[in-house]
Image (cartoon, rainbow, N blue to C red; front, side, top):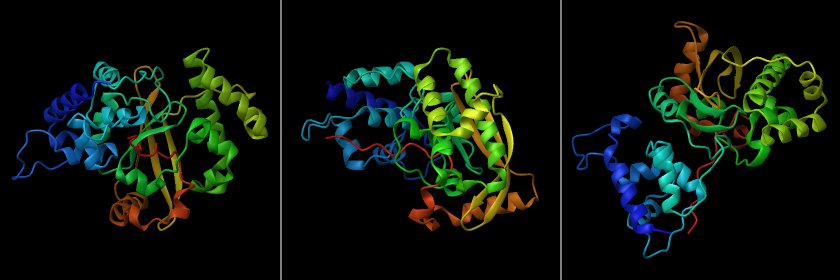
Length: 301
């Protein structure tokens, strides 16, 4: 593992990003043109000390960044695909071949749009509804993420296998969302072709959920691009919002955001949501919210 070269690469990528590009104020006392080390650490979900060791080459502590840590750094530093691959090469980690799953590399165009949606709940998800990254308002609206890996990282999978996952919507809305999720999953399955990940998920869901099996056999297909949703919030009650999806060119990732018409009750509730913040949510309420984001990386040392 070429830790000195990796550290130098991280420094140069950090220096080229302006604070405004990631939603940070420039400030009159900023002494560096790009981001500070602690800012990169915060964006990647790492400790400042750990990231500092990475930039210094890790000679003293012998840091060994995991693939999850590298993926988080690639997102924080807005690396394109070639730069992401180079980062993994330097760390001597296998380059992720899949564009899916919680550790997938977020497409820069979607990430750039997410950065500009600070006033509305928004997140980037895969076509299997695995959350890759989200903003603070999305966490406030839908709750912070539980630690999930494997099939249960997909909210669609949890929807049909974990009754608690449905608490985010009123019970009378559940049949509608079930139909939408299955039709969207069938579209993703066809788009991916003979994809083993989707095949395993569909097979498991057919075994575990009669509702899923019945809906899957209808062969309904529809990519979810827009929907009207009623979301149950523990403090604000039911919030009625418009949900929009912007798909990447290959359809494998999408930017999802929530909004409401000006002057509507939903718009007023969104304003209150920004005031409440995630600190008001209890741990028990957080576990059953929609499409949780991937948990922050745990640095391996």
